[in-house]
Length: 164
Image (cartoon, rainbow, N blue to C red; front, side, top):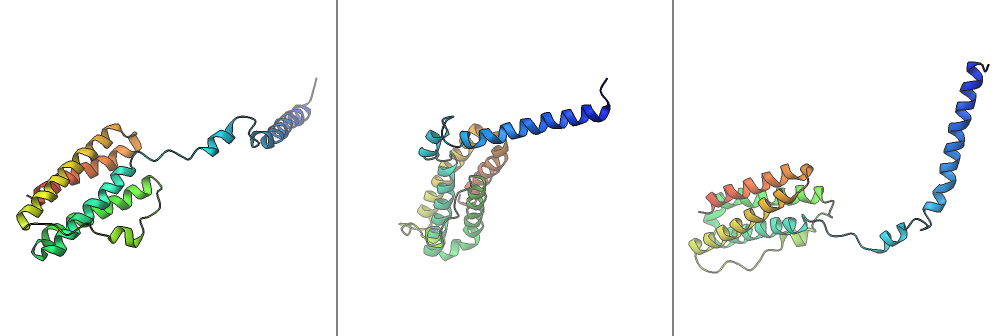
């Protein structure tokens, strides 16, 4: 009958042999034998939230352009523009996208045409479209992303009241 020490040593040798065997296979796995080279040649698919990130940046820029054209709207629209920038920052972290450059994030669309009322109407239309896309993204998202997207959709719904 084997002593406990002999059983323990035999067990350790078995574990060591398994580890050495796994380590020996590692270089083979890295050489494309198992098909992983194909995966590296294909660029990764864009994250499904990338359009929502672009939309958040666009909405922020539209609000900032309206503020620049109509300073009287600054008190109403500045918090909305800031919220869109915060959403863009959160989305950037979630999708692990590079942060937008300062020039890209500060670039504003053409100044709004028309008066304050038509500008607010255009912002309302953009917010409605944005709220709808955020709600759809929330419904289609994985559970770990749904809370953020639901929050963005809810915020955009409240923005509709601000631009009324």
